[in-house]
Length: 168
Length: 339
Image (cartoon, rainbow over all chains, first blue to last red; front, top):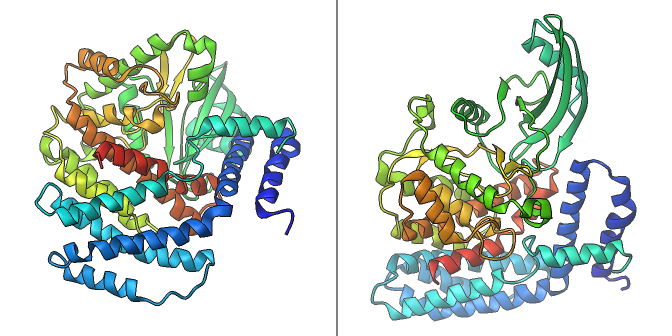
């Protein structure tokens, strides 16, 4: 369907930067508008890939937990059992963001406990656990490095200049 | 809204000798995410003379990035002002919500200054005085750390049990915030808390008043290159002076996008100047611990904002924005942990 969701978000950004931006005089109002622009920038950057990212993240997390199971079992049988149960759950096939997020949360909660175990064991003689630790951090890096952040000020300034000039 | 008439009535209650009190130009200022910040001008007659003053009023928010104690902030700022630390002069603390719907305090407005980190780093008139601002930045933090907090009556901030307990006290403080406010699993933050527990710093060289939000973007400056006032004391507590040094160093406050601390000076120069001004030693591994903690703390603060937004306790979209910006902090934490 056109305009796409991303095109609509970009349109809203243009409206805020031009017509509405000109009407807002107070410093507080301008600051709030800039915050709104940043949120729209973030959503426009994320929207198209969000289901795909969640789907792939869930696959990667499942693989990570499966790989860590042998190393975890002697240290925490409950965690090992819960990870096995989560991995054995039949996929419901839904690609809605809410369903993918719910699965993602469940798996991340297990990785949270896995990492606590790893940090307590760090420096010890448990190479399998340390491999799981390295894999977990690698995955978290991949996830954290995605998308637009409000610390990417340069790209944001360029976007705003473009919008004020009337471009998308 | 904050109504000028109500502010005038409040001033009258605080200034019984004043007559013909007029309040104008009441406006909300951006920033100050933990409390609303309002500016206003007031005039009155007192003892036959006309008085004109500029004020800032900080009112409790509907919800906040930080759940902090306004009494503590007021008391600390009042105490450090009495010792010549550049902060706005504090006037009145008002816990009664009947005046302006929520509790607030009133302080001096320091005019003719800027606070924006962007202006500090990019406007030529301020770039020209970066060296002086950098020196002032170091001198003020050393001045804060040299204060005798006992004689200032700041034991109410509850010091850590001993100099070795500073790190663990802060870990526990911020872990409790993550416990309370997380809306979803936080594997990286949980791992970082564990890492911090296994990498505690040596005991603090002395227990000092820690500003706890000492950074570029939190002080008023002008073209003279002097810091006119340090703001945002709501997280002040007693602890390890290197906590402030590391917080000033964390990447989110390196606004220039390079490695300069606060966008102002190279790290080693910052350490050297601070050691010279304070007489303390900057232990590199301790700073690493406190930088990991600083990034974790900022993430915890963002989680509080996100929860306020998702629980419907605030309409502030800033809370939504910060909640979705923890990812870059996570990258920084992993870099610092070396994982």
